[in-house]
Picture 1: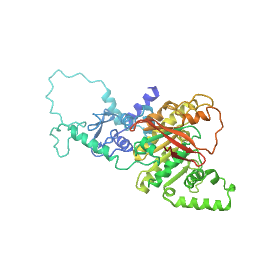
Picture 2: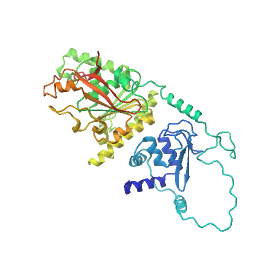
Picture 3: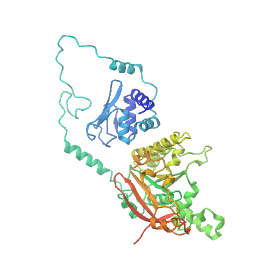
Picture 4: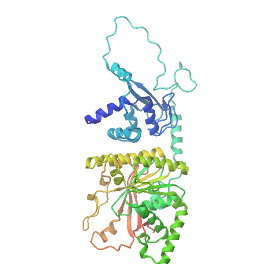
Length: 467
C-alpha cells in the first residue's frame, strides 16, 4: 500500500461516524435501523436487521456480522471491500463518488477521544482492584428480541441460520432470468441474464457485439422487461434503425440511406418504424446516445455512471421492475468519467472504477447489466497468422474488469470459418453469414462453456446454429 493510500484510508476511518456508516450500508443495499445501530448484512445479503451491529470504538466505527459471515467484522473500508470485492484504492474511490466520503473532519471531541485512547496506559495502583461486575451483553452479540438486558443470549442455532440463508437464496430466483432469445446462450448463462449480476461481452471491433446486444435488448423488451441501452459508439437514430431492420429482416444500411429507396419502400419503412415504436419492444427500449441532446436541452447529455444509476432507479420506479441495462461499451464509458485525466495510468483506473460502478448498479438496483468490452490488439488474429481464442487477460485494460464481472463472454470467429477466409487472405462476401462462437471465459455462478451462433452482418442479427 502506498503512502497516499495509507493516508487516505486513515482519513476515511477517522472521519466516518455512525451516521456516515449507516449511509454507506444503505448505499451497499442494506436495510438499516439507525436507532439501534443495526442492519442487514451487505456482504452475505441478509435481510434481517439483526445481522450487523455497528458502534464507535476509539474514534473509529466498527461493524460485526453475527449471522451469515462467520463473524466478519472491520471498519468502513472493510465492509466496502467485502461487499463489492474490490481493492482498498477502489473502495476509497467508491466511498468518495457514491457517498461523498470523507467529508470535513469530525468534531474535535472525536479526535480528542482517539488521542486519549492512543495515549499510554498509566500504571495500576498497588491496591487490589475491586471485583469486576458481570459482563453485559456486548454489541457484537446482540440480545435477542424479548430478552431482558441481564439475560444471557442463547447459543446460535446453525440449522436455523442455514434455513434463513436458503430462503434468501431461493428468493433470488422468484423472477425469471431475462431471456436472450437464443436457447444455447440462455443455457450457457444458466437460464438467461439474472438480476444483480454484471455480464461483460468482449469481442473484436466490428465483430457483432452491438448487434448481439441489440438483439438481446429486443427479446428482453418483447418479454416485458424495460431496457436502458446506452451507446457511446452509435447515434441514437442508428441504434433505432438497427432494431427496426432486424424486425423487418431488412439491411439496416438501407434505413440509414433513404435516398437509395423507392417511394414505396420508404412508405413501407415508415409503417414498420411506427409499428415497432408502438409495439412492446419499441415502448420498452430506452435508447441513450452519449453526447446527444435530452429533450431539446441546450447542454448535451453525457451518460456518466452517476446519471445511469439514477436513470436505472427511475425506470425501475416507473415500470415497477428492474430494467436490463446495456452499456456499449465499457472503455468508452470510462473515457467520459472524471477519473480519466488523459494518461494511460488514469485510464486503467477509470476502466476499473467504471466496471465497479456497473457492478454496484447491478447489486443496488437489482438489474442485470450487460457491458460490452474491447479486446487488446495483441489478441486479434492476424491475416495469414495463427488462430487463437481470447483469454481473460486479453480484455482492453484487463484487471478490474474480469474481477468485478460475474460472467465474461467472448464473441469470436469460429476457427474453420476464420481460417477459410482471413487465415488464407481470401476476400469475404460482406453479405454472407458468418459462424461465430460465444464462449464463457468466466462464470461465477454458471461456469464456462461455448455455443455456436450465426451472424448476419447486413441484417445486424444473430441466429442459432441448427443441426
